[in-house]
Structures are given as C-alpha cells and as structure tokens.
Length: 198
Image 1: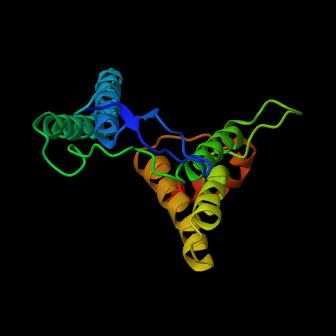
Image 2: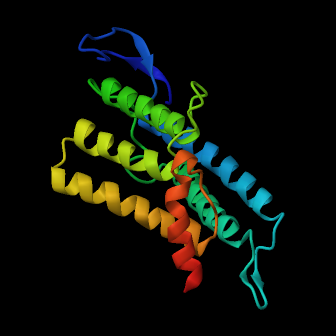
C-alpha cells in the first residue's frame, strides 16, 4: 500500500526497473492532508477580519476567504474519510500516479507556472516590474491550452480572454481585492474610474 515497486516506469521513453513510484491512493492522502492544513491556515488568517455580515457595509473583509476555506476544509475531510474507508475509485487505486509519458507534460506545466509567476512579479533584471497577474494569466492559458493541450484557436483565445475578465470582476469588483498589475497598472485606471463612477 502506498509506495511500491513499479515493474516498469517510463519517464522519457525508457523503463526503470524496480524504481519506487507514488501510487494514486498515496497521492490522494498527501493532497488531502496538505489541502486540509492550508484550509485551516486560511481560515485562521481570515478570522483576523470580520467574517460575518457587517451592518451597513456588507460582508466583512474576511468573509469570502474564510467561508471558501471552510468549504475547502469540509471537502478535504470528506476526501480523507473516503480514503480511510477505501470508498471510490481513487481511494482504492494502487496504480502508479505517473503513467508512462506523463513526466514531460507535467514538467512543462510546472515550468509554465514558474514563468507565469516570474512575469507577474518581475525577475529583478533591468528594472523589469512584471506584467502583472492579468497580463501573465492569458499567456499561461494560451500556452497550456494551445501548446500543451493542442486545443483549437477559437477555444484557446476565448478562454484566454474570458477567464482573466471574470477573474478581474470577481477579485477587483466583487471582493475589492487588488491583484498585482505591474507595469500594466496604468491601463486599469480608466476601468476603475468607470466602475467607481457607476
């Protein structure tokens, strides 16, 4: 159970005989535990601000992150319960987590995420401030869908536009949480001026 010897694990097209690999069941347990800890931490930090309805204002500053984290914690508890009881196809799956040929796309996604974070915050070279979250997110979506996923141009471009817009509305307008914008921040000033004029 958990870790076991894989008869053949192909990473770059070649099998590795006798190499240990993580099973799907073990990965389910580890992710459940990690997400439970993170959820509890987010709830604790969010509780530093009001988490209920503030009269005359609306939801408290910590309301959205607290209750979203609470829902996530409840979900992870359910996942761990199913893992202990061995209920469901994932909780009973002893197959290797990474099937042959999966290493390359996973590594590409990891590198793309690293590049996305670097573009958001900047890399500290030549005074580059970064293009912000709303500049880096469309590029990541484009790379993930088109380069890795080989989706159509229409679905790729549509998703790369719609997702950042919905993210902007959710965080900047509804939650009033400002995400990093880097050198693109001046482009958002007219948008904010229009929103606050309504």
